[in-house]
Amino acid sequence: MGYTHEEFAEILNIEQSASYYMCKNIRMNSITPEKLLAIFAVDYNTHLFIRKRNAMERLLDKAIEDGKIQPKMTLRKIFGNKAKIVEGKNPSLCKPPIEIFTEQKCLIDRKFFVPNRYDAKIFDDELFPEEARYVKIPTPSLLDELHKFSMGIIPGKSEKEKETERERLEKSNQELERIQQHIIARIEKIISIQNQNYLKQEYWLFALYFLYKEVEIYNPCYEFIKKCYLQNGQKKIEWLPIFKILGRNEHINNPFDYESEDCLYFRDNKEKETTKDNLPVFYYKYKTSYKDGNSKSLKKYFDNYYDEEICNACGGKIKLVHLFSIVNQYYLNTEKTEDEAFKATCIKLHQEKIEIPLISKLELFTLPKMKSDMDLTSDAFKFYQYVDRYFKRKTINENETEFIKFRDNFMTLGTRLFDVIAVDFEFIKKLSANYDADLNEILKNATQKYKEDKLIE
Image (cartoon, rainbow, N blue to C red; front, side, top):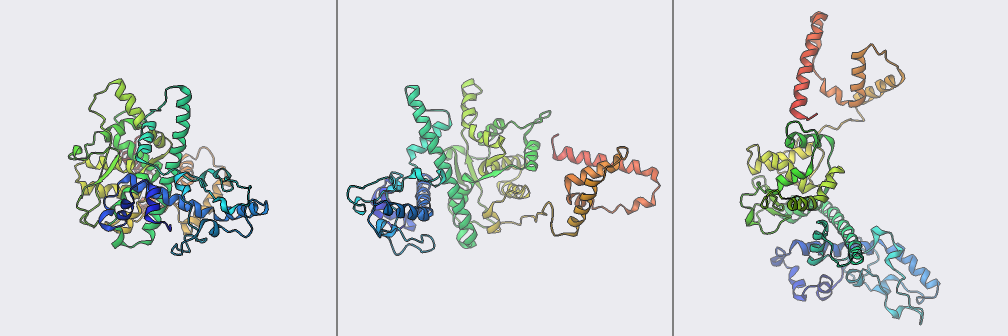
């Protein structure tokens, strides 16, 4: 960034000495999750400043043309530069103005303006789309406010004050989501370029990825969760009871040893390297869901507490830490050890197309090779295209029920159908047609039993 420790301390609102020691290996381990989030927010604003370079150059040229800024000014002359900034990451070599962090404003010193033509809004954030505007660096107090806001708590005495606070907190919440998305993008980049020796020591990458990564719940995964958690007779998932189960924290041997809730803790506090014999098993401590019984006030409390997770899950998305905990809790209840449950959960998510890059990069255990739904280069796919055209052109007689069933299966499953029915049926020709109905009934029963074992209809 090209900043001094004094300037960096001002941005993070910490002591200058804290900024200096934060960069020393001996002190890095004491950086709190809240401070790490603030550091990534600073990184995000720096990223936005660099992203805006071309647009800012056009705005600068327009201001010079309009006679507001002195001729021959450049961004580097206005903001200054630091030669040690890597060219590829910051092509203009401009040093971001400190105000983008402290005030979310990109200001220019008056000395660069033509006398009496000062305009503080030349690079105003309102000129840029929402996703390119600078964010407020989150403080512990702001994070606490946002947590209360997620629970439906809005400060203010009058309705007007509450509405003003609601708008402020909604804006801050949107900015926090953008910071978290930036964190995931940065972590995925780090994982892609770093080697195993580096990654196996960086537990914080693992933690932040789980906390902030949002994943899609594909239908097969949804069916698995239904099978694991629904009681007899239930057909549809209700997410609140599942989160309440997690909220009992039964997966943690001594939950009171972990002070903070909504936080991820690793089992190995000695910070050994992650290896095949030292899996990064972690505990996510949920808000306790049973200590006050089943009162109406407690039910309302947990409705609010899990509201965001429930809304996301109903929309088909969920934070990775919650999905992992849901699946992991199931395996722990099947008498698996923590290591066995961790491994089984990673494999299950992999099978459901939910990848955890650090797991595959570290090669902690073998993940099964997954066959794609349809190999577009295979002969099977070419045959599928041919038969697909046939069925689309051909009207099948409604009396040919067996053929209609084959067509429906084929059109729904594509080449997956070939994998499922890849059984040697040649023996059938040795039997009379009278046996066909018997074999068909046996296959139906076997298929029905498999469906009942794997799915809830």
